[in-house]
Every structure is written in structure tokens, then in C-alpha cells.
Image 1 (cartoon, one colour):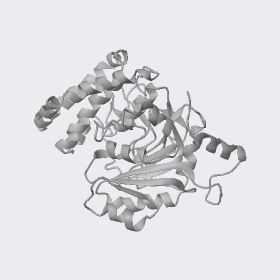
Image 2 (tube, helix red, strand yellow; image 1 turned 60 degrees about the vertical axis):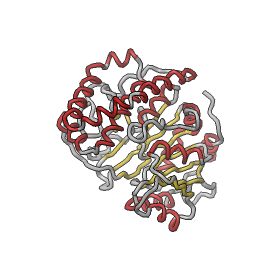
Image 3 (spheres, rainbow, N blue to C red; image 1 turned 60 degrees about the horizontal axis):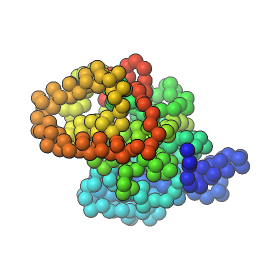
Image 4 (cartoon, rainbow, N blue to C red; image 1 turned 90 degrees about the vertical axis):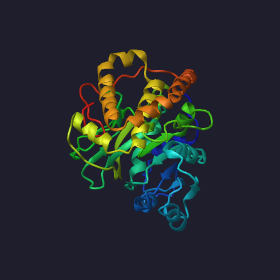
Length: 360
């Protein structure tokens, strides 16, 4: 696999020279571009950008793409962070398209996609970048905690047999149980470090790294799955620590938790979650793996259908009306013929707990 760009040589050069990645080094900024998509996140944005200022080593590029916020988010960037390039989208483009715009506007060999409701500890990138010494690594995930700094949010992402994304450790107390580096399925999109060569190798036409049919939700799983099919690896590095203000730390399990999580969403979000689940499966799953996991997949699908029928029948109608997007996902899969495919089964054996704390 060919790896383009000078970033890998930069990292290996650091290791060969025996340098440590601390603020006292004079080696210059890290070859990383950070892309933050903001949409009415003024409560978090300044702290997120301040944490980037306080990294052990600065990064070369920071871009904020603002999706027409009405709470002053753009003004926070413009007035308080002159080192940040602000792109004002003029409309809410969604997470996927806005990130694509930001990534396309950068040039560094590594791209950190970062949610505005995150804060990185100073050594976050120092803990992640050495993973890319392995030329097969396309994605790196760190250890994300909630803002209480005791509860785990994500220690890398896995794929459940039900085809749900599973954030390892989600909602558990941090007792050091994930303090071991590991290979994972992908990275939570709240703080995911990508190799640009990987992004370019799987992009749709028009520099669409994230599938813009998704708008938001499931896009991190879809990108990781496409990268895996193309032969790239995803890894977790526990020394790279950040904080993420994801809502809720419920430890309840089972169907009631899943139903409560879905009922707590607006119909618009329910639509995107369900739509994107099927877009992900249609583009990435294989027939053999799908059949082997059929009871788990259909169990989740039936429960979701019953919930939507009872609480959001309009979402079902909209999914039927927009069914052309599913045919388009199959068409995009056919365009992926240049990728090296790997049949991917579940990332875990046995039962797993999903983002909502439920078994999958």
C-alpha cells in the first residue's frame, strides 16, 4: 500500500532523533490539520479551541466550519482565535458536508476531525501520531472521557453483530480497563485522527470523504468500514486522552433503553439515524456476513420498526419517499471496485453494549 505525504517521514524522524513531543521542542508545528464543525455550540467552542492552543506541540492548520450558527459561535472564532481559519457555510450543511469542506481546505498529511464539545489534553496528538509509523494505519482513536473525567465515553469504536456502532467502555467508570493499545474497528467521530492518504483513497467524487447522503450520524462507522474494506487499519492509543461532553451516562440495558434513547430524539434525527444505518449496511456489508448475523440485525430492525410505527409513522413514510438514497448507496458500492475488500464480521464476540448502554 502506497502512503503519500511527508507526515510519516516527519514522525519517524522524531523517533529516530530521540526527541520527545513537548512544548519545549523547537521542531515546529505538527503536520496535522484540525477541522471543527460548529452549529450553535457557543457553550463549548472556546474551550475546545483553547485546548488546541495548549497542546504540547501546535498544529499547522485549524479550520472551523460554521453551519450558520445563531448563537455567536462564528463571532467567538473571529474575535478570540485569530490563528483559526473560519469558513462560514451560510446554511446548516450537516456534519458530513461541512467536514468535507473543511478537510478539502487543508493540506497536512494528517487530519483531526474534532467535535466542538471536546477538550483535548496537551499530549493527545503526541499519543496518537506515532501509531502512523505503521503504514497500514489509516485511523487512530484516543481515550475519550466525559467531562467528569471519571466516565469513559469512547475507547475506539467496534462493530456489533446487529451492525450498531459500539464505543468501547461507553458509560463505564474508568478503572484503567482500557489502558492497553489495541486494534479497533474505527474511531468515534468526536475526535478521530485520519491519514490524508486514507481519506483520499476512499473518497467519493468531489472530495466527499464522509458520505454526504448521511448528513449526520453513523458517518464515522461508514468511513471506518470503507477504510477497512480498502485494507487500512484503525488503532486505539490509550495515552491520547480527551474529554467529550456527550449527553447521558445511563447504565441501564436492554430494549427499554434503546426505545427511550430513540424516543428522546426529534423525528428529524430519528430519520437520519435509521436512514444511515441502512446506507452503511448497503454500502459496506457482505452477503455472507449479513446472513451470519441476521438474527441480531433483524432483531434490532424489528424493534426499530415497531417504535417508529407507534411514535413516528411520518419517519417511515419519509424513508419510503426517499428510498432512492438506498439505491444510490448500492451504486456507490459498485464504484468501490478498486478497493481491496475484506469481509468484516462483528468487532466483538458475544454480547456488546452500544452507545445507549444497551446490549447489541
